[in-house]
Image (cartoon, rainbow, N blue to C red; front, side, top):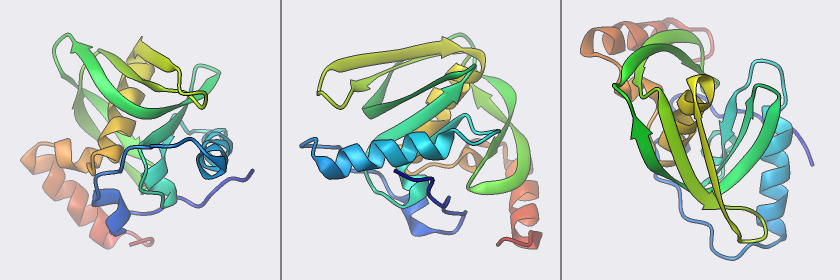
Amino acid sequence: MTERDIRLFGDPVLKTVSDPIGAIDHRVRALVADLVDSVKLPGRAGVAAAQIGVNLRAFSYNVDGEVGYILNPVIAEVSGEAEPVEEGCLSVPGLWYPTPRYPFARVTGIDLDGATIELSGTGLMAQALQHETDHLDGLLYLDRLSKENRRSAMKEVRESSWF
């Protein structure tokens, strides 16, 4: 399919809770192809459907050379103590802030055949699973920042050339 443009902070789709995917039809298959093509670019660990303007529960990931997708993901488990991890977002370009994330995460969902799948991991994979699922729940990593860091981040957003 094709790489899609990333929606930026301020676009209402990024603050909207995504709808679950019902029937898996040609549109959902095209969405998955676009998500996978869009995440393959260097420096991308994940792309949520909301980031390409589609209000459906799906995301792609590209972590440690493994590229894939999941439909209707739900966080099934997190473990460890949430710790600040430097995090950025394609929808908030150029900003990196310490964001509380659990060191382990597991999500469940389905694939294009409707079969149940599970993704889990530590490190960057755990962070990506939490970050992308947040997108589908209408949250940006900025929403998880401490009050002080959020204030600084919002100032940077307002002063950025892309906003």
